Length: 150
Image (cartoon, rainbow, N blue to C red; front, top):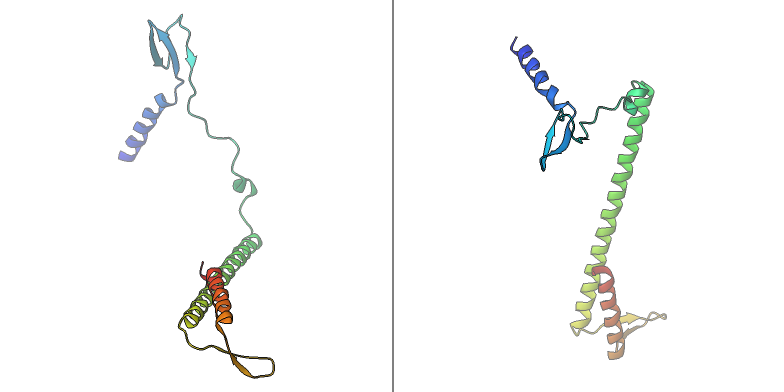
C-alpha cells in the first residue's frame, strides 16, 4: 500500500514538470509560466526532450545467438591476446634498452678509469689503445650512453 502511494505521489509531482513553459515580458519584467496571460507576446521555451521512439540498435537485432556469442567471445579473446603480446614486447624493449644503457655507462667508466685497454687485431695479436684511440673510444661510448639512456 505504501509503495502505491509513493508511486502515485511521484507521478503527480512529475506532471507539472512536463508542462509547456512560456516566457514573456509584462510591465518591463520578464515572467515565466505554463500559461501566458492573454494579449502578451509569449515565447515558447523548449521543454524536456521526449524519449526517442527508435529502439537502440542492439534491441532491433534481437537476442544474440549462441554462434554470435561465441564469435564475439573469440574476438575479445584475440584482442586481449594481441594487447598482452604488445605489452610484453614493449617490456622486452624497455629491458633491452635499460641493459644497453648500463653497458654503455660501464664502458665509459672503464675508459675514464685510466686502465690500459687492449684489443685484438685481425692477426689475433693483442695491442693497447694509445691516447688518440682512447679519446675516440670515449666519444663513441658517450654517444652510446646518449642513445640508450637519453
